[in-house]
Length: 393
Ligand SMILES: [Zn+2]
Image 1 (spheres, rainbow, N blue to C red):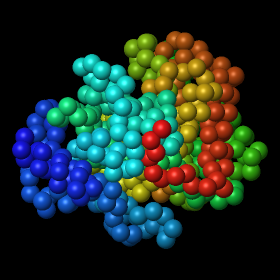
Image 2 (image 1 turned 90 degrees about the horizontal axis):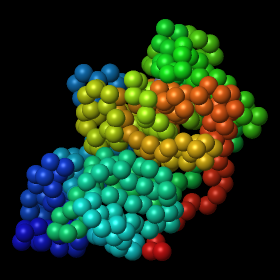
Image 3 (image 1 turned 90 degrees about the vertical axis):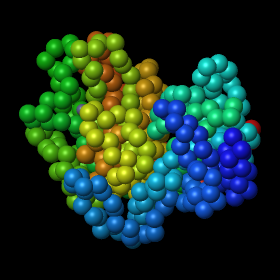
């Protein structure tokens, strides 16, 4: 306890707020008490210098990428120290000019809210499910209590809470952005099967991509589809296609299934997991937290794009919000050199959602929601950057 208190004092004095806490498993992690360990733990200092070569674990297929000069640098893999840092939420708010976190729900899993310029971020202890401005956001680690204080993992604060509360940075999108839309699956890979009969995800994604292409093209965007027919296409070819067309944005379109479960329904929007955080979905793939993929250079942009699209799709439909999530195994995202997201637009294993997806009017609503979000992301380019500091409200 004494060590912990000393560490807190030291960390707060440094403005870093690094601290020992308990992991999900209940074992103690974090700092051991020496000053030099604490000084390593500024979670805002994760960016590597420009030109850093991505590091990958043995067995991965990521190739070093030559990046255009204006592209953001890849983040470095978090050090072992950063990977184990838990931060008292109150201390983090204090160092980010914010008001202290508010307890908004007591109980075994208390809920705390942080008020920021872009909305309210809430976290619930012992679950990864958080919210920002009404949207569900999945954290990498469930917040924990230590010394009666809520603690968040440093990387969740750096990679999720801080960027969302700060708002999007000025966009780099040109006047007529080039976007690659990726209708998921195709050819012998039919994707999910509708619970209603022999109707497949690959057809629905292609139809949705056509509808979205028309809307974006009408607004002056340059739109390319990875496939315009019912053909096989590897994930690597889809990434290469986006590279060839020098896409500014990449959006992969999918419909979800949990067959034979017919209950699950709703919208999920995915982006690549930032290095050092566990994924929210692994589908049985190894989830190596040390991996840094080319698309990790766009962690913040990915998150903002996902949030914008997710919100617009929820508004355009009456779907259940199943959250903005991160996954590392998605081969169509992780080698992208541009902001990239993957939308799981509805569950076609759920009879009522399958019925909706089978309707052209519903697919048009999805396309319009997506188009509104994407066109809006271009419009933010001319707006002044929002205040970076968190303000008490
Ligand atoms: Zn799919």
